[in-house]
Image 1 (cartoon, rainbow, N blue to C red):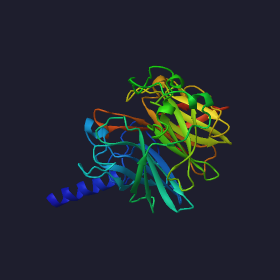
Image 2: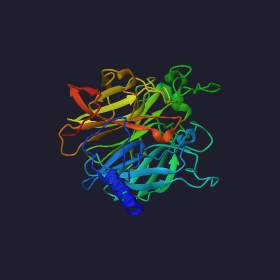
Image 3: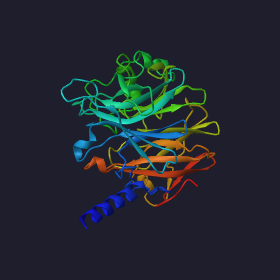
Image 4: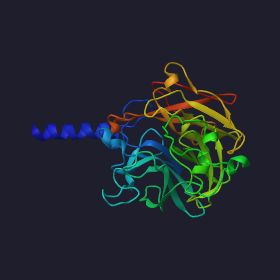
Length: 371
């Protein structure tokens, strides 16, 4: 009898972990091939050789899970519904190691792109060294030979040191930095950023880089998009040909609008952004914009979310927009429903994107499928 019961339990567990999903259920627990809730927060997707790879922050239980205690987790899928756990592809270093990505640092929004020239997989992420809160505002870079890693940490930096933005007025280049003695919050600055001249303050050491994403254009050029200037302004930077550094060519956009959580994609020759406002872990009304080129001019389109709870982006924050392979103009909004009191229980909000002329429209669906 004991043997029969044990066999029944094993078969039941196998059935639970192996049954294939055929739809998305936003906000619900999303289990991988092992039956465990997927742990890839603030993530992004790489499509390579007919496989989707999902990279994200590995969270742990409790409030302490909002810092990096493990590293970057990777999952793979061929249908976007069912995901195989590929393990930790970038591990944080031990405590007291003094490493840039020491356990307890803040490592957020990892994104991976493939460099065809170098035949390398390149990961960028927002990095705050341990113990300094969000004052570091740095970017981290890691590389790998395979999409499932292991990734090797290369460096951390602040972008575009020694370079002014391409669209920075000449008179501001010569104006003084007016930030001395002032205190800054994540969602406001004491004066308009142009009056403060934050770019001038950070000219030598490099510009601030917090919430970020990567975008690779049809010509193979890659761009780093991040919240900068104390979160007040979005910076879009052209990367070098190897995708490992900033080229010094960059622009500043949405000055003073406090856009974070950027997600860029391209449709019919136009460039789109989905972003959020800056309210910490608390959700807010989403933002969106369109432009004829990566470097603008950008035109705001308003909140893309429509319906009940749209002013809270369905209790989510953007992290990535996924082009669905084989589906013309098929795009999926990827958002996070954060749970800062128990970080590991963050949920994923994936919803289809549709368009009305240039405007991005995202409606809530309890359940839906690509088909």
